[in-house]
Image 1 (cartoon, rainbow, N blue to C red):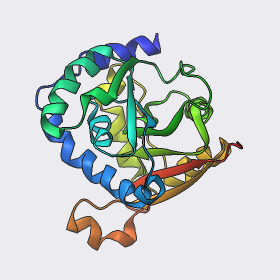
Image 2 (image 1 turned 45 degrees about the vertical axis):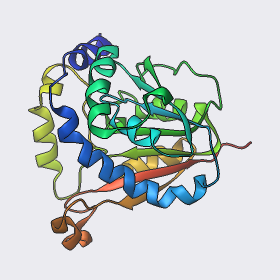
Image 3 (image 1 turned 30 degrees about the vertical axis):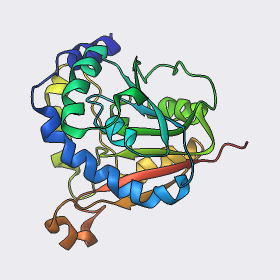
Length: 236
């Protein structure tokens, strides 16, 4: 029943103009971690990427423009959202649609991919929607190759000074009203879940505006602006 609520909500969340609104934010976050990770991928080609909770496929199309990426499996609980939004997104973002394949997948269930299938797994504003973050991370680590990277960008955070406001806002959100799984975590909680499930995470600050750059010393206290780049510790 919970999965049906999630699917129903996102099947109908197909607002015109979403791609234009989201693309600059998604690209800013993607560029922040790609800048750090491109040297690791330099000289490599044909890498297989899983964009889990792909939604509008903005991250998928951004990554399809990278030379090291050979194919991107764009996976979401709503096939309708993938089909509709991907067309809008490709017009706005560009990218190579030939590299993309679409998969209707509920990441609250075991992922339908063999062990060690992917060189990179990314989630854009999606991990916090997991109904069991422990199980989701276990599955991500399973389908990643040993030593490969998992990236969670634009995650939903709460901070020590903003807990009350954050959870009040979530309770008033249309997602919660519709029965959709909507969560927010402290950076330290994300760190715990990742380490407990066999990852070594690092948190890369992302500041989209000069205001946040000036207030960098409050990152993680009053607000949280990070990419999470986590390496699987799975042995080869």
